[in-house]
Length: 112
Image (cartoon, rainbow, N blue to C red; front, side):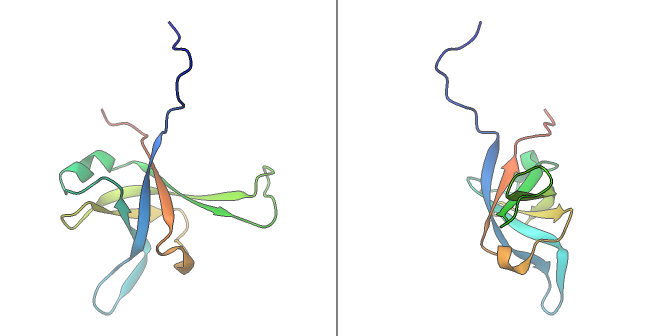
């Protein structure tokens, strides 16, 4: 049976880029810290491990596929702290102007 007049399904959760992984003096650009909306505990962060992360930017000229949107894909690696922040690694390191910006955490691949 097919459901009529259904709303489109959102396959992602919003997140905010906090910065890079860092110590007191050193900064590691290959790992970014992401705060996931609605995630407040370290235990709940386990659900998001392995999920894909998309950082979407808009360019002035169309790319190979004709779209002006560019996507940098990453993956959630592990949790960070006790308040729902996760560490992510991207295929290309995030640029410094992305700090404070938005990412989409896709709800796939599923581990259920």
